[in-house]
Length: 196
Image (tube, one colour):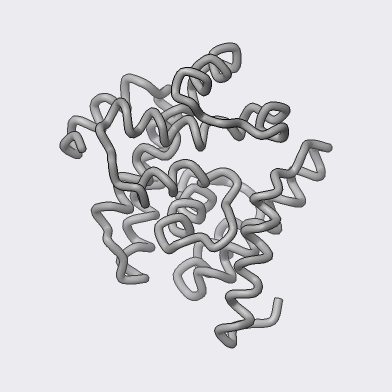
């Protein structure tokens, strides 16, 4: 893996100033959550920093880039191209930043849709992306607070928001988002958590 500062320099050249600032915000939030939940802050910071490394690739190049890296795309991702930057970002993070850590790459790949049985890095990156300080939407302050009290409940609420938003746009909902939400609810119930 490239040194942290080298990753930042290279990433800055790949993203718009707005997207780079967002990535730094996600890193800050992810680091705070990783400390709260006693996780590997260094690993989570790298995943957070590079999570959107494919975000500014123009739509007309996304499919070519996905094909170049052997990223398999399902019919929902083909129709909703904004979803491609997650799995493509994992491939680019491996190639451009020499990141071989499977947990980091998985968290980058699933940060837009979630997935069944998310691990702690997946959960923290997804939630940090949703609640970083640059995000401005109704209910974000509540979710930020909840994230430090009950990670799974905050994630479920985040998935609820995402599902409602996607439906309001009359867009396609990725099955992994449903699997992620259901898996979290089952995990929370099995651990004696709140009944949502």
